[in-house]
Length: 85
Image (tube, rainbow, N blue to C red):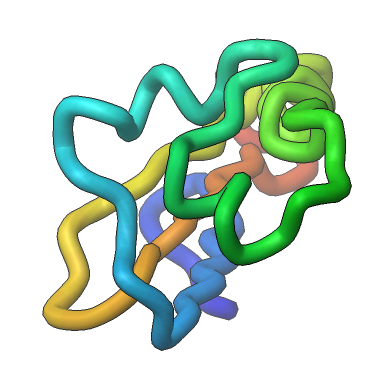
């Protein structure tokens, strides 16, 4: 967790296989599940990341996936109170 300019920044990383650049926007679509995710965990609906991004947007923030040497790296940016958005 940190701060960059007028935003709070929270980064969550895992040690899995990561998410290919061409799939990084698709995983935020409702009901999207990559083949690897289906094999690893047959349950789930593919809604978690879509809902998370909707919440970020509702608070004038962003949720993205960035390059990482290993695994997936999710970055949430939310404007700090009193900042101009």
